Length: 203
Ligand SMILES: N[C@@H](CCC(=O)N[C@@H](CS)C(=O)NCC(=O)O)C(=O)O
Image (cartoon, rainbow, N blue to C red; front, top):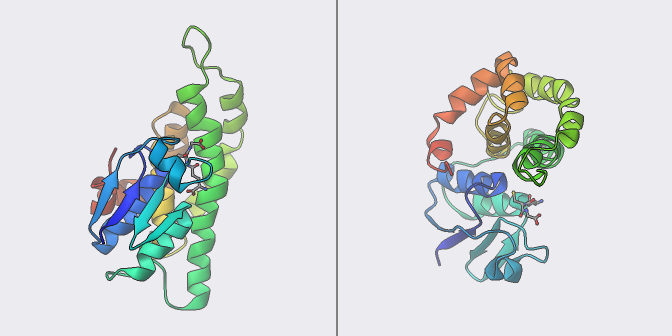
C-alpha cells in the first residue's frame, strides 16, 4: 500500500515528515488537508497535522511518523545506528519539535500571521515577548549546527525538524535578522536550502 502523508504543505511538521520520505527516496501520496478537516479529525484526536496512513496503520505526531518512515522503508537511515549517537540526534530533533517550534513558530510566526486587530494590523505584544527569547535560542542553534548539520556532521532526522522552522522564522523581520547574524546557522540554512528533500517540499 502507498504511504499517505496528510497535511497542508505550509505546516512545518508536514514538511518535516515529507523531507524524511524524500531523503530516503520513498514514494508517497500527499493529501494537502487543513487541520480539523473531516479526514484529519478522523485520524488525529486533536485534528492536527501531519497524519499518516500506511499498510493498515494510522499515525499522528511528526516524530512517530518520521521514525516509522525511517524504520520501515529502504533508503539511507535518518538516525545513526550507534545508540549514543542516535540519542543525540533524537535529542536535537525533539528540541526543534518542542522548544524551538514553540518559540519561533507558535509564539512568533503564528502571531504575525493570525494575531491581528480588526483593521488587519499585527498586534505586537506576543511578538515582542517572543523576540526576547531569540538571542538565547539562536545562540543555541548556531552552536548546534557548527559541525555542518544539526548536532552532527552528517544529515539526519534532526535537520528535517529544524529546517522548516528556520524557514518560517526567516519570513519575518526579527527572524531574518536573527538568522543572518548567526554565522554557522546562516551557512547551514543556505546550504540545506539547496538539498532536494527541502527544495522538493517547498509549500
Ligand atoms: N506535536 C505535533 C504538533 C502538530 C501541530 O502543531 N500541527 C499544527 C500545524 S504545524 C496544527 O495542526 N495546528 C492546528 C491546531 O493545533 O489546531 C506534531 O509534532 O505533529
